[in-house]
Image (cartoon, rainbow, N blue to C red; front, side):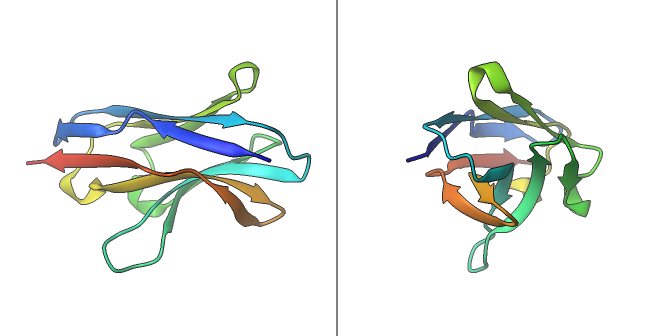
Length: 116
């Protein structure tokens, strides 16, 4: 069984930075990628960034150039460095592990609040 635990959320002023962490415990050899999502109120979760086992990166257009996803294999941790934060980045951010091309395991989420 795989468990994902996010941390690093908080409150920051616009233009500031935060780094989210997702610690992965357990293992599932079927996992193909790790990703970060966020869920706007009343909407489904949106993909923010992903990194495949082969290191391929993907970003939502709204965060390109501002957010960076990375991983530390030795620490079983995935990071999301968020710079130049905007109020519209306010959301709950979720870590997810994909099996094939579908997010299968989810963390509990961490709140990010960006104020003007």
